Image (tube, rainbow, N blue to C red; front, top):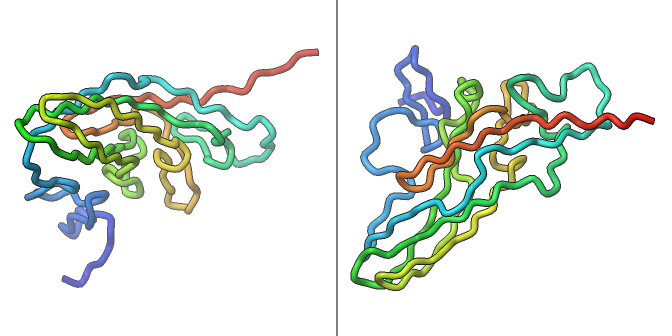
Length: 185
């Protein structure tokens, strides 16, 4: 094998490398592990729509927001995060620790050749006694973890329906650009 590209190349029948870009058959998924107990995840609370506030001070010919993406440098990123609360229930007969892995898949419009198929955006290890349940709060910084680098090297937040993957659960989060308000005097 002489190709060391991360991204897949279908014309050359190259499936890609790492869990982020590999699109071939999988024996064990990334993060799969063994445990002495069984855990069930359920989403207790998570937003389905999030507006990306734009920095209204940008004046350039390079578009801040298109119908497909927002430049990270043109978004107000300081406190822009998605809060997800997940209930982790230990349905087994033994106490145990469970690592909660949260992946994100970008919208289909961004999932072209440059965006990863999915990427790890958060994780948390939680100890749960047998037969009990723990609520875990996960905070996902939108500009850091839901953005992708386009083919020109510009980091953008793809607009549209992102998918958060937590175990077998898929949760849609629709990102849209918030148009800055106009102040009239």
